[in-house]
Length: 251
Image 1 (cartoon, rainbow, N blue to C red):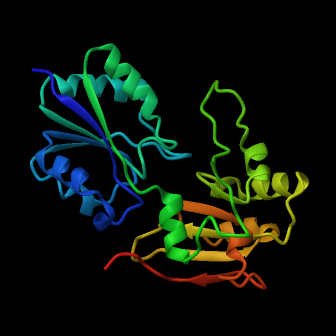
Image 2 (image 1 turned 180 degrees about the vertical axis):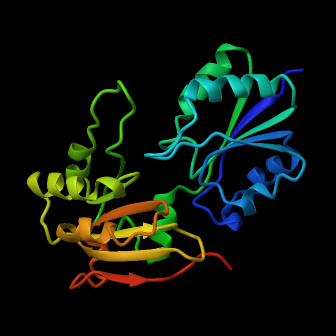
């Protein structure tokens, strides 16, 4: 038997932000290979499936991509429905293309199920549209992180060119990110927000100025954090002093 591998977006964390297709596939799955940050409430939607953790987190033990690729092929030869459950959206900073190419080269059918990416959940939580008439006509999704042996990231040029910036996997490098942006010409007073665990009940929003980004990052509790940057934040978030707000999309 050769099954189908579904690259499914788990969204930012809240189970009720999954798509209907994602929930249906989880219920049908024989095996789920999931990222580290997928909450147990989402994994519970796959009661019949074997769950295999194959996550990657900066500074912690990570599963090698080549191992994940092989596990997906082996799983497709045993199960009709294989779910590769990725945080956010599979096609954004999720290494989905590597898995698609590997599976396709071995004759394994692959389908992608989109998910809500963290930047959009963070924007929803702060009540700030990433694009606004007369303020922001361009948005860039960037990450300063690069894999071992990969070419340097061009994130800085992209961030400086856009009106609004969403920075993934950047909280640990907050000081260097702020210094690079300011040195590149971004005003130190540019509004910035760090949204930790967007969409979850214990999510926090830390708001301030670009010059304060490192100080804000030090207040995080270790959850996944998204950095939003741009003038769109100014009307909605007071940037006189760093502050903390608590909101949730979950009901």
